[in-house]
Length: 230
Image 1 (tube, rainbow, N blue to C red):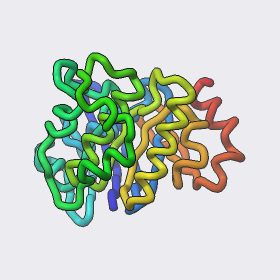
Image 2 (image 1 turned 135 degrees about the horizontal axis):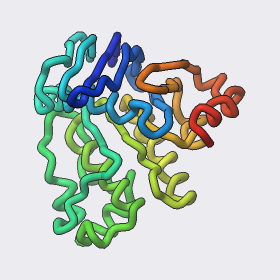
Image 3 (image 1 turned 90 degrees about the vertical axis):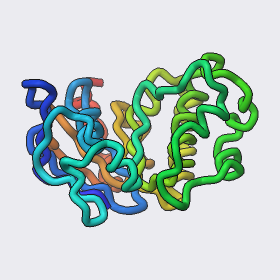
């Protein structure tokens, strides 16, 4: 579905990504693991056309995304759920949920979203400021599922969340995958992605340094945690 070849990215004069190569197959969960500053978020921002300058190839369903505007990329069916979640504090849960436009047919309707996220139904009238971190994360994911996007870029979805909420996020991502979505999952938590992602890429200093199938990831997790500095 998404093929990234020799991707370079710059922020101002800083060269951040150095020839990144990776794939996100249709209907699969792919993790991108690395320390802070390794280039994980930059990879997602490059896919969405949000970097100052990029080069290489970003092939999505036969179209090269490079040089397209962010709104054009979004209309291809790609959505970014950023680390800070971008929930509007003065809007209710329902208002936040319906804020993004529908960009393609096939998005989840409100009943499907309420089934997948029971808290969204229960907190429908609550303001963004009243939500816990876990509830904000659920709302941020739910919001992009409604748009019709089929490739989801989830940036650090477990950041700052309690272990019980992290488990809930894991179950939710697994259920989203069952609906046929493709997911690129940026994380520092190796144990969170173990058993969840089908393929794992390790990034360091803006370069992919390893690729592990899900079946071999558990055997390599000590080495992965060393790379992550854990």
